Length: 264
Ligand SMILES: [Fe+2]
Ligand SMILES: [Fe+2]
Image 1 (cartoon, rainbow, N blue to C red):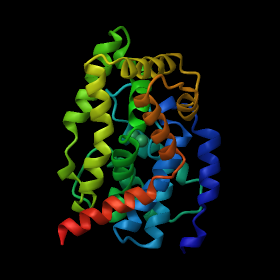
Image 2 (image 1 turned 30 degrees about the horizontal axis):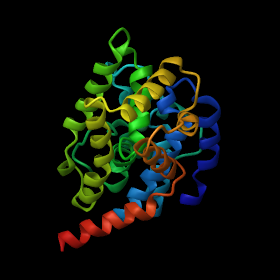
Image 3 (image 1 turned 135 degrees about the vertical axis):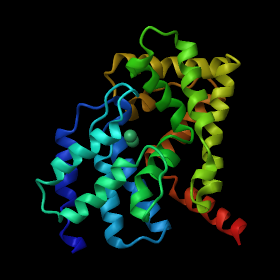
Image 4 (image 1 turned 60 degrees about the vertical axis):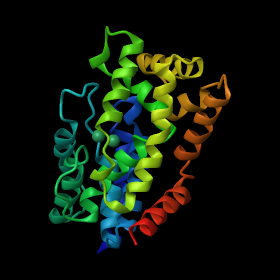
């Protein structure tokens, strides 16, 4: 049954048609969340079918993504995803399992399966983490209508404060605690530098924020185009590229094994 799921066709459809989203929520974000969600199902010992359904859920999880946090895009994306998937050859039961993972990708609920929590885990522990988030979050502040008319410095600070304070590693399965703690460190480091008005952090934030406001350049391109001015920003760029190129999975696996050892 699993081999009959039209994954490639859905991926092509999303790439071609789901384009009215934000720079920070473009196809490259969908694709990384898909790969991440599938990886989390594997680590949590889900089935092969769940791995594939998680991949599809990742592709569609932000198919509706307005430039404001005031609307729940998870609910809107779930509805649209159902409509999209009805055009493909997938069983209604599988569509509902995908829809459940999309609907609950914003905050933790009582999880019913590895698939159910996979998109949430990929979105929070990979896409909102690491060195990459220093770039992505500053672009987001630039393109988010909630920050229009507000000063650059306090907008960046508010967004990082909000996200970092909200982050609670205990909300994740214990096997991901080391990963959650390690992956949070770069955003804390960046934010601390920004609050102290260190040149490298201001420079990186300003570059990304302006790109977000312009809304013309793809997220991965923004990182590639960024010209580091210091050792710190050089490290942030290098590590962010490692992540977007998918070269961090050995590191993630190491952190998972670390948590397993601690749990023993
Ligand atoms: Fe989302
Ligand atoms: Fe997302």
